[in-house]
Image (cartoon, rainbow, N blue to C red; front, side, top):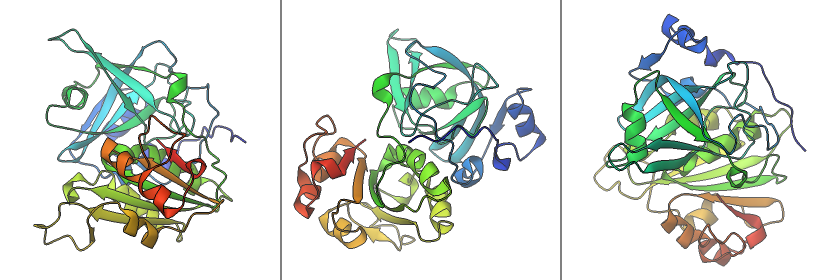
Length: 308
């Protein structure tokens, strides 16, 4: 059921300036002022490995920050060098890693989960997309971290989620805010694996246009998917935005029934977002065996819904 690791490096991962080439081969670090994720991450890439191969294990291990790209005013893409430059991250799909730093003022360890936007096709490095929140301790630490400094990472068994191939003809992704990065990880093999005919509907809820994380990457992938990836944006606070011509409101029952296929044995729904989103759509993520809310009203069963 698992695909072998594709070790080849795709052209987008080393294309660019002399500085980025130097960064790639370990000769230096690179700070980029701007960069679209569609060019930083590239096309959907299938490089799937089974669980248990991640270079990070249960003990904390350091990785050096070698590149930072400013994607938007409050979003950065960080590239970390792996301890062994000849290996890929070896992270299964879907799974996350944990990042840690020790707060200097309180000596308290700050730990947060992150899902890389890069794949195992990237050798010796991996990429994280981070949204900077006012007062966010980890995000602001990463924003200010000097190139060449290190962050500690680890990966444990409970970080492993549902695994590709997902075995369904259609997947509906109901996403809010930073919940988008696990969906990008899942989309890589769905759209990047030859012969995979799975279709995907993503309903992505945000407050404003400036909050739309990974927008250019998602729209690029949708445009090149030959209709297999349908992307629906909805904004909850666009009343004063004359430039927004899309949907307004929330990810709700009416929107899901309009944009996504009806429940069936070949249809899986995945939910990833803030706690209120789980409460409204499917019930707490801490109770995966229970289904409540909008998705139950529509007719889905607990077995058809996965809570990230």
